[in-house]
Length: 317
Image (tube, rainbow, N blue to C red; front, side, top):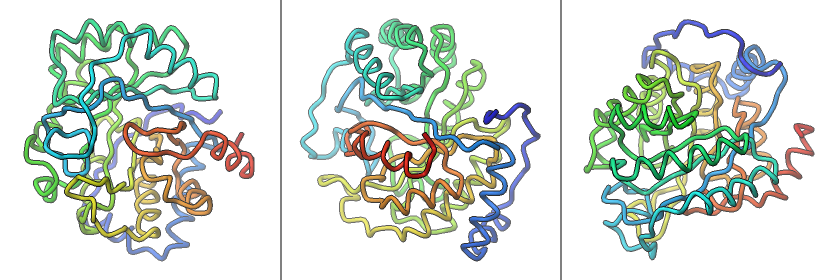
């Protein structure tokens, strides 16, 4: 059985402890992460997720990495929320291709009450297909989170993006506290939390470590932690961000695994620029979920056939 059977108490991590983990010799760090991973996931498996953009563009937030922000000229046009039937067709195709988890994102600053019935209908439609469901719709009230829970939503995604100290360098239209408040609403509604960040936005190693500390010290512990590698998009302020060292990214995956041993660590955006060998090192470091499909919201993603070939080589599927 590759699923965790019993929750363990959340260990409170200190920033200095996590920085020391980052400084561990690379091979030793990978060994430690793989040891932790196999303890909690004895039979290695890869969860295949598909991410659908159910409402594109026109977001009033100014996240410097995002092509869907109305603040930047990226060529992305604002579109209306997709109907439940259209989303169902995408979900059916994802399931047919092998995905077991269907994630849906809407380019909103926050969910409006008038859209809750439509979103709830989409959730019920996708749940009826037997897929695990996740949504990211911006900020939520507690009442909205309860409505999504009642509709059958499994997970709500709301990333911290980076450390508390670096956050204002990336976003000015929403505070770190706003994000934590939404996460509290999600937890109080009984939803599972999917929360991670983006690496390579010009932050320091200390910023990366502090973001992981905030994530790891959440109580109850996180069930899902997406780690994204920045994809610089033309027209966004981060389009010329210097590339992050690949080994630093793999270290971040390994540290995330050690700090959050029972979570699904999701290798998310940026895989188009990763070799098969780098992705395999990320899997060895503890990543056990990938987003599966040709698009990841607005950025390119590896072809399904390529992913299946890689996973077959690794004898994961």
